[in-house]
Image (tube, rainbow, N blue to C red; front, side, top):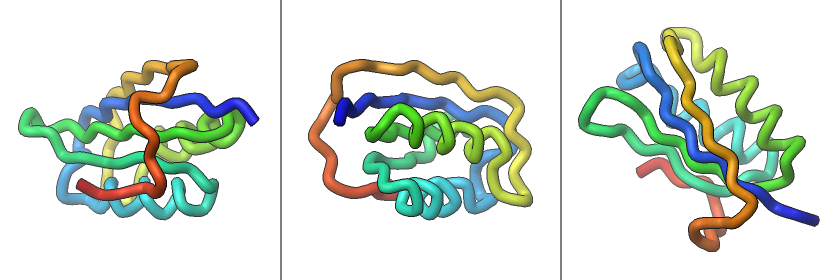
Length: 92
């Protein structure tokens, strides 16, 4: 199994709306590892590792976000190599 990594920056109404918890639940459901982190500029950074098909499904969920979020823009970069060897999905 070839694992890939995505690094996402979510813009819009993304902090204080449960987005990081939403990302963790979806990542756990799909068997992905990584993290979700609030940035000082009001964005949320999400890094996830796993099978490409699962990552694509995860991205579709992130584009919608939880009920109270408003995703204005989603910047995504794919990588064939993994930054770190992560073991679970964490909220940081």
